[in-house]
Amino acid sequence: MTGCSGVSPPPCCIGMQKDVLIKYVNEKGENLLNPDHLHAITMQNTDVYYLINGKKKKPDVGLDNPKGFHIIQGFDTTGVYLMQLYANTLLNQNTATTYITFKEYPTDTLKVKYDNSNGVTVYKTWYNGNLRMDQSIFQRNKSKVIVVTKHLSEK
Image (cartoon, rainbow, N blue to C red; front, top):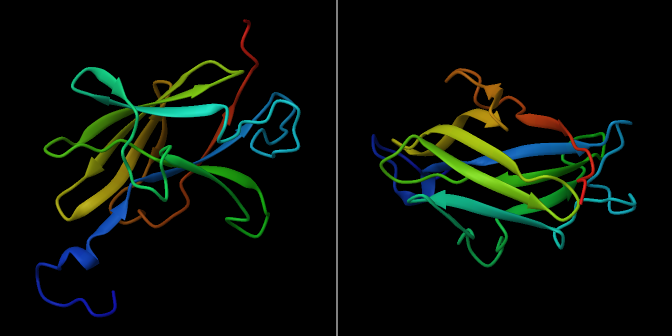
């Protein structure tokens, strides 16, 4: 990084790669993050909770990201809508759990394994108990988009 040198970088240089990119689709393959979809997943109908000391808590990740995620478009050349989720990461641990609740869909669980020795870098992701991403130290800059098929809740 520009302006960083030495063995132990100052706080400006510590990498924070704790975001996970998720593409939600229905059984037809339609992107549920597209706001024009009838059953769209939006910022208004979705909440994120971090598991901290055995309790679900709303994230406290700053004013620019008060809900713990963003819905973004055009991350790549396809212009696809994705959820950029900031996974729960706790000091003095290397795994943590995040819950994603939806108005019209069942709640999902995201568990991450991360390295926090020099910033935070997520390198393994389980979605609803299934390993969905496993990046070795040599592949951490590769795409980490997880595609999840959602079915409407029976409420």
